Image (cartoon, rainbow, N blue to C red; front, side, top):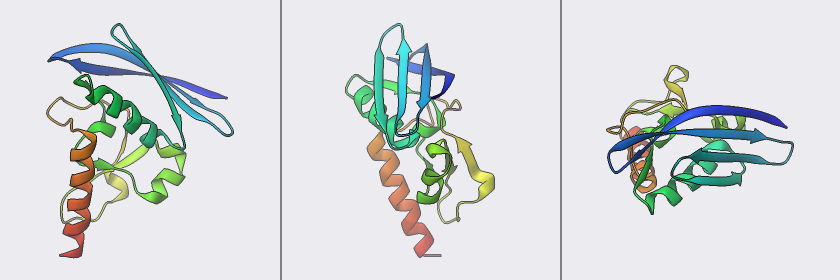
Length: 136
């Protein structure tokens, strides 16, 4: 089993708290465990982006914001990207512009609280981005 530890920041009621994400990738299982002084959560799934989304949905119930690129409004993976590298990378999207290799970001790299979005906001932006390409 492949294991990696990543430092991340949680924003809880406007205060930043350090947290650790442990990524475990096995033959048939991908798991993320997030630990901090205020919480501990473990989720598993088919790719890292989907698991990150599961964690975010749990945090949204408690108003906890995970400050990493995978939680940014304009960041979303393509189907091809999800199939490669376990969904670790995603595109930083710009309305009206095709996603480019140069716009790939690590979903666990830091983002600011201003870049953070809810899962629904992120999905809505992705749909808006898709629509913007059809109009070009």
